[in-house]
Amino acid sequence: MAAIQKLAEQLSPGTRVRVTQTLRHQGGEHRAAVEGEVVSIRRDPTGSWFANSRRDKVWLDRVTIRKPDGELSDLVVDEQTQIEVL
Image (tube, rainbow, N blue to C red; front, side, top):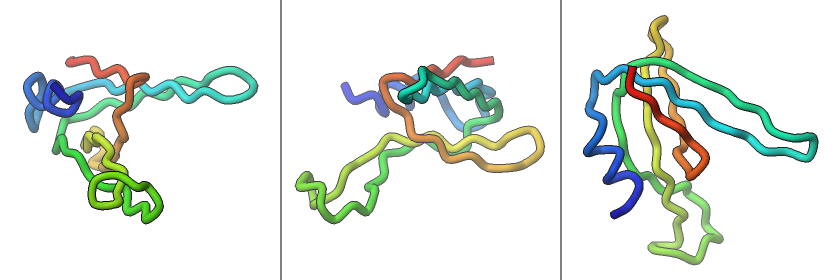
C-alpha cells in the first residue's frame, strides 16, 4: 500500500496534526515542525519534464495543513516525515 493511501486512512480533513520533517545537510540535520488542521492529502506530479516515470512526472505525496493563523502549508511527505495526531 502506498504511503499516501495509509495517510488518507489515518487522517481526514479537519484532523489536528503536528508534521515534523528532518532536513539532512552537510553540517548535520535540521528539524522543522508545523501544527495545524489537515486540509487535504493527495499525490501530485512535480511537473519535472526529465523524470522518465509515469507520464514523465515524479509523483509526490503531499499534505496541506491550515495553521492556527490561517496560513496554508503544503508539505511533501517522505520517509523522514513524522505526522502526529494532536
